[in-house]
Image (cartoon, rainbow, N blue to C red; front, side, top):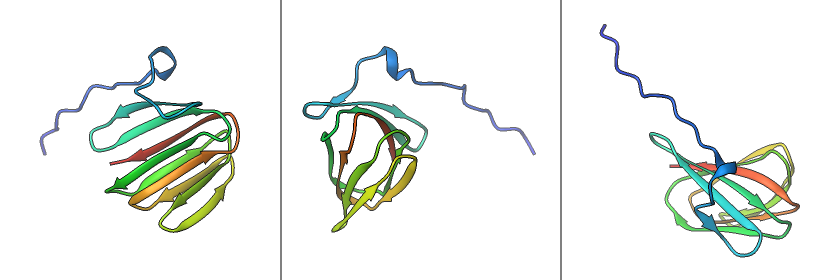
Length: 107
């Protein structure tokens, strides 16, 4: 079996570039694209809300530092720090319960 070519390694340095999105006061987001997914890393202030409308795919919200209220599909979940929440397709929002950072992924 012949070896397939591999992609060169890459990385994103969110700390040394300006954010691609600024959603209201206290919410800055950096986007990094992989081969078949996008990673969004956000720095937020308590009370900041990130919203998505009509998103076609499910996504995952990783909260390594702070908790958040996650609303999607008619449900509300108080997700604590150090949790991973799978969010269904469609409209959703994530409201920060403190100052810090979190990440999300989607296709």
